Length: 174
Image 1 (cartoon, one colour):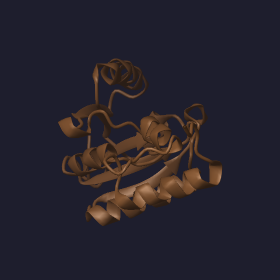
Image 2 (tube, helix red, strand yellow):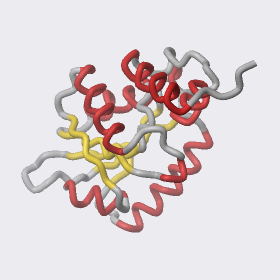
Image 3 (tube, rainbow, N blue to C red):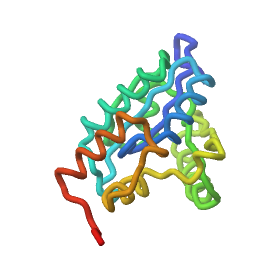
């Protein structure tokens, strides 16, 4: 169901801590499916964020601009996803899938979200095959142990992560 002005709005929610090449793949592809894609940067304290919500939003904005995607807006939120999507006038939730484990969790979430608002559809986009193993959690872990994350994030994000690791200290030197 398009917004009242006929615009089809999608929401791609996540913590984006940090934003990876996999996220950017889903953003590029999701932006083609809707007139306006809102990247909802949310808080999730259980994920032990490396960056503040404001830092993550600024990073996502920078990376989307660098990709030249012009129908994307970045908005922070700390609420129930379906309430946020309703407030934005969204008709679609975009979710990325990497593996079977993702599918099980996302399938359950899509079912719960449908119970909350059946007018908003959830669509799943499979990550590009070469990007499927990438997860923000693993990127952070690799960086914290001094590994090279350049295959998983853009150069600017790599610099952000390396700088942050420098302020919190690396782990596990042998």
